[in-house]
Image 1 (tube, rainbow, N blue to C red):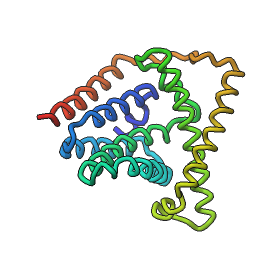
Image 2: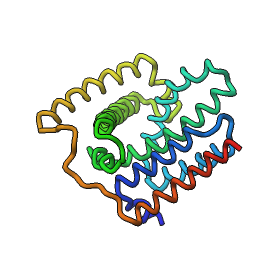
Image 3: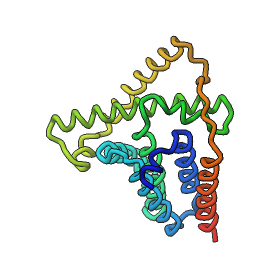
Image 4: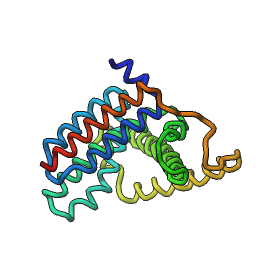
Length: 220
């Protein structure tokens, strides 16, 4: 089963990830039982994709710092649910992104049933996320060279000033990457065919049914 899951094509991996993320994002507030089910699914997904744990925890820690600044003013009870739900969504998408082959996000994106303009925006956002992940990994290596190890040490190292510097560096790299894409003839479309097979559509349909059931049940 593990080998079968790992052999899923990139477009199907992306769509399965999005189904779970959208289902979790639409959960009713304080639906902890349904959120626990989504958290279990997220952990299984991370295990099946064999996401690198050190990079995953470092990235989640950096993202949760930003989310906590937004959620905590809403009150502890509401913030705790929002943070856990955000953690589940980030765990799924980060696991998908960290296990992508280099520069393959556009291939995964090709099969999404969305307008071309939105696909282009998502593609550029995905390219930026790949660059951001590379910058986070560089910061983690720099922290390790300074003798800072473990998630707790990494969170102390990732101060607000360093996070701002991270995003500035990644934005500059993203602009250079986009300029290089345009210079190589990029016009918003990739010359690849990523249609799902009948078996893959069935897997996606089952995942949609499970996510819909969990989310709708949270409102009853």
